[in-house]
Image (cartoon, rainbow, N blue to C red; front, side, top):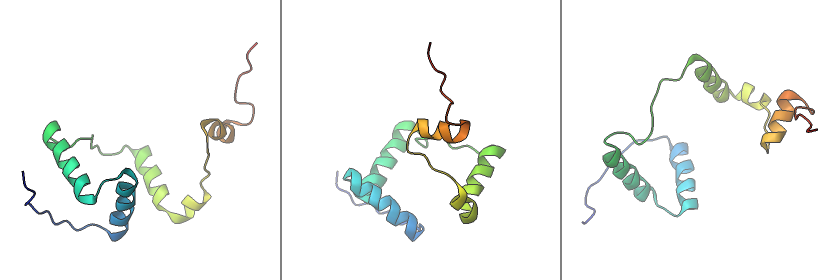
Length: 97
């Protein structure tokens, strides 16, 4: 079937550019990605992912992530072990006998 339908959407330029970089990494165009999304909507007879209102704890965490001052103070970890060490201390693993 020929592609003759057009969709016009207004999105934030940074979001469009970031998504475009991801699409490029996986080898699809923005148009292809939108087509895939629409096909999934049809297959699921709705959105292909769950949409929920975040609970209070999640909403607070999202606000913190959007706050540049708090975000700069957040720590990162490269591995799960590193994350647990940072949170629970160096001796978080129980030694086997």
